[in-house]
Image 1 (cartoon, rainbow, N blue to C red):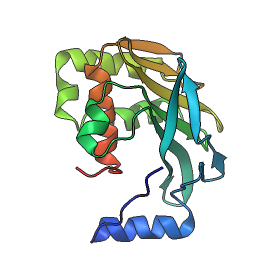
Image 2 (cartoon, rainbow, N blue to C red):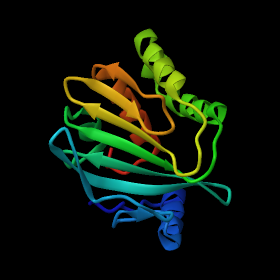
Image 3 (cartoon, rainbow, N blue to C red):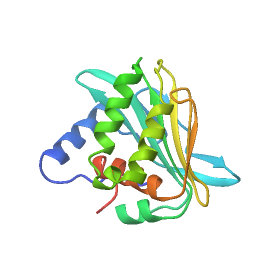
Length: 183
């Protein structure tokens, strides 16, 4: 699993502080949540590429992890790769559907592609599948090549969004907001 490179400035300082308090884990553990270093999906092996604790003020909100079939060398490769990839969220507190939908909408709408009609419809399909989250619930977003994005876990009623464009826009939005690969 690749480590996160420290950058100069405020981002580097913030990341350094996270490392000091255990916000970013390199051994499959963050915020008291353990995740396997690898997992099998559709007979293929995905490696844990990154795992991080999301806090708001002093509250632990969730731990997110990124699993990838192929180890990317940069942001573009991570998004464009037509290989299996998964974003996994483990919630550490109760969150209402409205809070979850609002947070996703705010984050994903920052990507101009998400405002295009077709992708906006897919976004609304994803958001309508979400519901109230209890502590310990998961939200799992898995891109399967040739199929599309599968949404599962206790935070969702489950939905399939066919094709690669929406999955690319979602992973692009997430990885742009949470830079773990060189641009």
